[in-house]
Image 1 (spheres, one colour):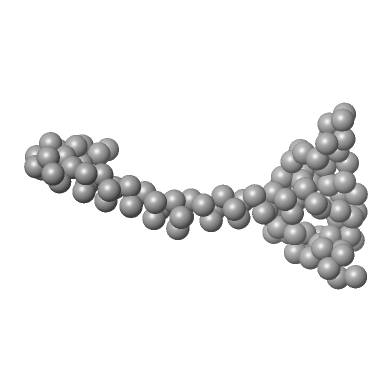
Image 2: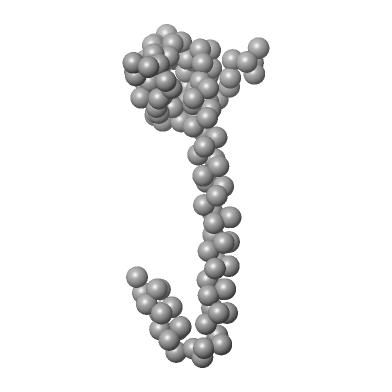
Length: 116
């Protein structure tokens, strides 16, 4: 909260010719933050969501709890059959079968088409 207040004081105390330079500087800092931090994180999140939407039987996954398992069955929750993060996925880890939500899968370790 103090940073915007200090910036406002700096704008008020600076000569009128320095105001465009300061605005350019703040714009450049925002652009750097956007292209270095925000944009790559958005792209990574979209790629992870796309991998979860393409999940199919035989894929090896890792859950948010750290369980490594193989996908056995995907049951859509919605009546229209659309892909949702609430879909229930039956997985097999060792001799145990578990039921997890698609949104709770942390990553797809290997795809069945990549191993075939």
